[in-house]
Image (cartoon, rainbow, N blue to C red; front, side, top):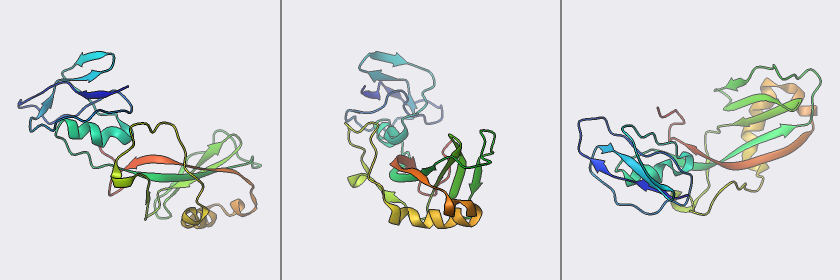
Amino acid sequence: EGVRVLATTTSSNAPSSVARGNNNIPAGDSSHHTHVTGVKTTHGDICADIVINCGGQWARALGEQAGVNVPLHSAEHFYIVTKPIDGVSVDLPIMRDPDGWTYTREWSGGLCVGGFEPTCKPCFRGGKVPHDFMFQLFDEDWDHFEVLMEQALLRIPALEHTQVRNMVNGPESFTPDNQYIL
């Protein structure tokens, strides 16, 4: 479904950006206004006093339509899923190791181990998500994942003898400093 800015006005309200929709965003005109009043979708217009940009990978393109800079870029995001491991249960806490750039959580009796490596791998030419891109994965890249796996092995030595079920490599949107946008 396409989505684009319905209208912008110059109001004293804080800058807002656009919400609702997933991909196939038509090109829109940038605006120097400060308040979005709704969105146009392929199912009709939606007027709103507050519009929240939940566009994920398309948030940057949606923001551009409202004249708002959303500092996001798409990068390949890697994680592995292991086969079941003795002692791993559904109530295992999620672990995050910011120093080692990794996270770990329970996944079907095994572990999901992924991370946010210091040098990411951009996934789209020119930083633009293709309009027809939806729910697709990229090829495995064990060489790129190595820095994360090395760190995970320091925290979870049992991984060395654990069978990996599969590696997943899909796009995620990130900020340049890997911090949250609220």
